[in-house]
Length: 120
Image (cartoon, rainbow, N blue to C red; front, side):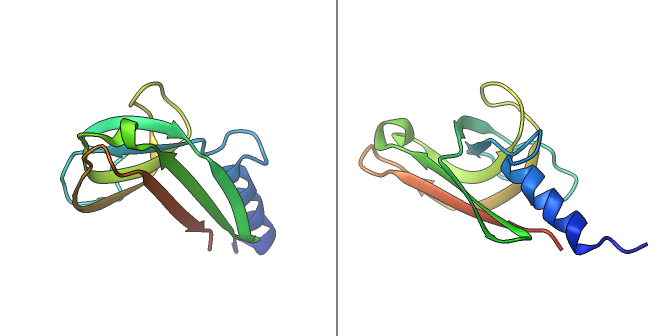
């Protein structure tokens, strides 16, 4: 069996909200652990925001953007983030998880995360 381009295109549209259930949120957190394909949540989620922009750079790519203002980020030591379709507050199953070196926000910094997902 071959997973064809039409199938890939539909999965991309599904993820971005053009069809049924979609990725609606970015989650950020302060946890630290090696990233693994078996993880379905952030280690220590601290906030969740609706995506602020969704674009399709190509038929098999989706670009998601999440934004936080300086007040929301004040005091955060960001170490992880991911995208999710469900949950409330800081819970929900994530589609991806990224681990970064700790970034400290002192109330003067805003945060914008852009994540591009390619289906292939």
